[in-house]
Length: 357
Image (tube, rainbow, N blue to C red):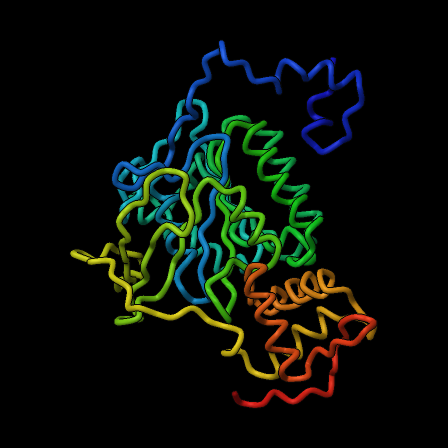
């Protein structure tokens, strides 16, 4: 028989193991498959189901952790909080909250906030929530701790990882990013739970940060975007950045005198028109940082190699765009002598000066 624990810890699969797992991985049109239990909803829209993962994302100080606190409080108490309705199924009532960024003092405030939002006592421990503070551990150790915690308690139905980028060393590493997202998919599926992660947006634009952000966009069930309202910075708006179900109407919250998030009534969800950042909006220092990353060696590149390098380089500064934009960008850089084309190929010229068009 297959050693499923080893498989779910990422070990390779040989021919004998493949035979053992074939019935598990094979899909049959004649069989019925139950839709996974919904555990978090917003006005009839499914946000989270068991066996999947989701994310809250936003720029620093956008109140992402306050939003996550509301989700956890709704799941813990069964009450509607902000606009989140949550319920964990029997045998899956426990919540594991992982914080990788803050001190115990600050995490204690988060735990108290969750309990207060849910109308639960803060003078006694709640057996349905575990809060781990992993600031002092390495990325690999953090993943090991999460893995061991999930192995040891089958009643966990919701996991929050506040600081997904701290589970890897390099957020721009495709291999590391894929590994950690595979862990999320493996944990959520194997242990029949939902994982909600928190990730920052790039400061330069509204894209999720690094290759880990790209992988989350591709694989997550839902990504919630939290932003400060442009007409009132005391309010934070929540809307769907990516969702498999129908979109919900955006809502907003603000922080009251008790330091708790409260729903803003009659929020219309309108956003002032804002043009998307283009490469002409980037300053010379940003272009240089991207080009230094794109051309680590002063060597000639072929056309496609140059485009791929530009994509990696500009993603490293938070400017993530598609092939057509990279083609236009390459022409822009050639016009400014930042990239020089010769019969040998394309070469980066670090002595370029960015002139105003």
